[in-house]
Each structure stands twice: as structure tokens, then as C-alpha cells.
Image (cartoon, helix red, strand yellow):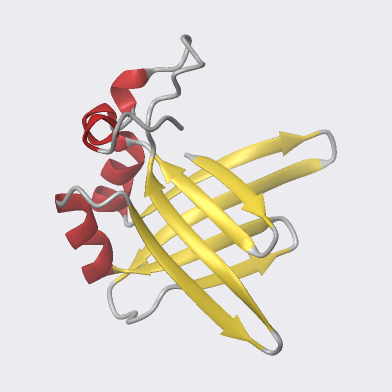
Length: 126
């Protein structure tokens, strides 16, 4: 799973194995280890949630996804789930997308990326 930030947006790029974890365990997470600690980023599937939510703590972020939305998305060819959370005088864009293979990175495991979806979407790369 890849994580990207830009202004007030967070983008998760999920691989096929990440979707399997979401399907089987209702969460997928990764860790980045720093010399003084770690940072965890996590997607969680919540059965009784109606909307996407996000939570930031000192050393982690978690995005909660409604069960029905995620499981429908897993079955179709839609690239992503997109949602904006509005609060105070700001907003946070949340993007959860199926990961395409990188054309520039020959060492990447392309078997875990959505190659077939990339081809349907004019060969867009990661």
C-alpha cells in the first residue's frame, strides 16, 4: 500500500493483496520505521459506518471505510473511492485507489498491481 499527501489530501494506493486483507481482516496497514519511532497508516472497513471518516493521531492515520462501499468497489472496475470531509474552515480529500503498475520501475512486483485496469484506463501508470 502506498501513501501520498498533497495539500489537504491523502491518497492510499492499494494493491491486490491489500484488498484481500480488507476483505478477510477488515483492515490493511503499513508501517514506516524511523530512528525515533514508527508511523502507521491504515485502512479499516466498518460495517455500521455510512460515511468515510479519518483519524490522525501522534504517529498514525486511519481511514474508515463503510463496508458496503468497499465491498462493491472490490467487485467492480472503478479505480477509486473519493470523499471529502468538511470541518471548520477547511476540508480533507480522501482518495483510495487501486494501484497501477509503474512503467518507470522495472523492479516493482507488477503481479500485485491492477495491470488489467491500467490497460482499460489507457495505460496510465502509478
